[in-house]
Amino acid sequence: MKYYTTINYLPCDGDQLTVNLYQPGQGIPPHTDSHSCCTDWLCSVSLGSGVLMEFRNTQGIARPVWLPPRSVLVLTGESRYIWKHGITPRHSDIIPNHILNQDNTHEDNNSGEPSEEGDVANTGDDQAVNENSGGDDKGLTLAKRGTRLSLTLRKATNEVCSCSYPEHCDDQKRRLNSLSLEDSASAIEQKMVHSVYEEIASHFSETRHKPWPKVVEFIQTLPSFGVMVDVGCGNGKYLDSRNDLIVMGTDASHNLLKIVQQRGFPGMRCDMLSLGLRDSLADGIICIAALHHLSTEQRRIIALQEMLRVLRPSGQVLVYVWAKDQTKQNEMSSYLKQNKKNLRQDTGTSEAVISASEEQGEFGLPVHQNRTNFLHQDVLVPWKLKPSATNGETETKTFKRYYHVFQEGELEELILKAGFSQIIKSYYDQGNWCVVAQK
Image (cartoon, rainbow, N blue to C red; front, side, top):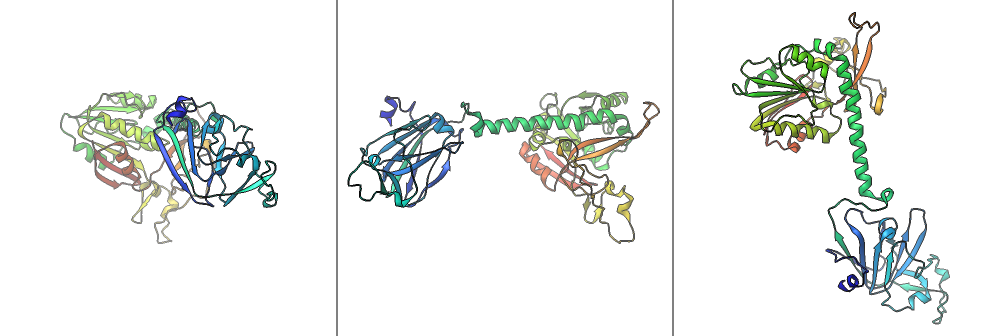
């Protein structure tokens, strides 16, 4: 290979070698090597038997290329990135006589689009074989395959692909799709979470006044004069659970934070993905019914990693998220019990009504029917805002909030992925999956 580097057939030495042994009749499916696995060239040496390799581009144009024994094939440019190459599994190849009669040391440099020179037209018709060629360079002949050893040399890379063929590049498409997904996630959360809470903040606060007992129990375990941060604090109903704690509420809603400040507590407007608090600040963090508003797993992990960053060593976090299963041990959650249809006594069962609605909302997300079992994990949940004399409204408005409702075990898995050292406790509480974890 050093020789081909010195004569500029190869731009540099390779560092990855793939060895394949092909028995007669074996082949390899048409493919293009991944753009991100190696640099812009690859080199293949054929030892033993010759073989016919077929190149095919995206327009369906096929170019068969004969690879004689001891030949070197170099792929760069379009042949590296666009043209698929493969070997049909069979015991012989039909090739022109003049190709087979060439020097077996023939080297085919396939840089760019497969060249016309040295290409062969494979008819695929055994009747086309000229059995009486008698050394005539015209006509076709049948070349039986023997055992072939293929040595493929590459220069491996961990860098992103920046080739000139983005429409054919698996790496660039993957990164583009990732960016598109991130843009969509941000748009969903902005329109179906942040904007909604700004509209319903006052009414929402009126319905959120009683702290959940097990959340208060967790707060009671924090050290005296410690720091507690409530991520996604809403109206701040947990910030007055203890007088001997330094507390801070964070939320994305400006209008909810105004309520927090009216109650005399500090609140900071920030995204869960970037809390804006210094490292190792808090002895404890609570995140109650907020993480489920993030629309991708990666964003949920990032939010948990932010909480991990803000916690002091050995600090603990309590996370509550809505559960997809709103019935546990044949007992309906308080969410389902608010629907009188779920409390029919004549059936002798606590099985809840299942929504028959399949309404599709924005972003193609299904709209959940309130107070019924969840049919999907990613849903829009309606919030009905009744008219108020103070705002002059006369009609009820319906806003839809995005939720990702969790399967059993899903929250624990996310927390461990985020890097927490251990899960202290996990439990089910009135239609929520709940986890206490330690840094």
